[in-house]
Image (cartoon, rainbow, N blue to C red):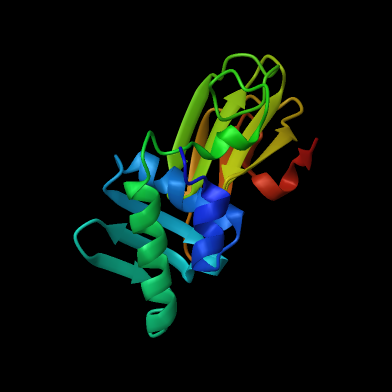
Length: 171
């Protein structure tokens, strides 16, 4: 890709992290639409090629125009839209770090992805292009729940009931 994410981000006055969030959202949207949540991009927002743009900071027309231009440039860049996980060297093609094994469950919504690895007792979470890994201890995860009001809070059910992501230790 001749125009890499960092170059496109700089051209529009955004961080590489914000541009990666757009690239990941565009990949999920087939390159023609994006649903994202990043503070630099006005919070939660949506973009559809052909002219539809909405951002949480709805009255900031300058920011809206910059986000639209960023989305258009990333979507129009030659080659495949780069995955946010490409920032991690040594990847096996998955967005989570190598060495965790095979996930028993994965999911995604908006700018958050998660994968559970019971054999290694780990939970990987990607938010805004950044992957964090958590120790699940002796929890046997049976399901995920994501609350979106005011933020993205992830919780899961285990044999002990509902456990919030914030209750786990990052490794």
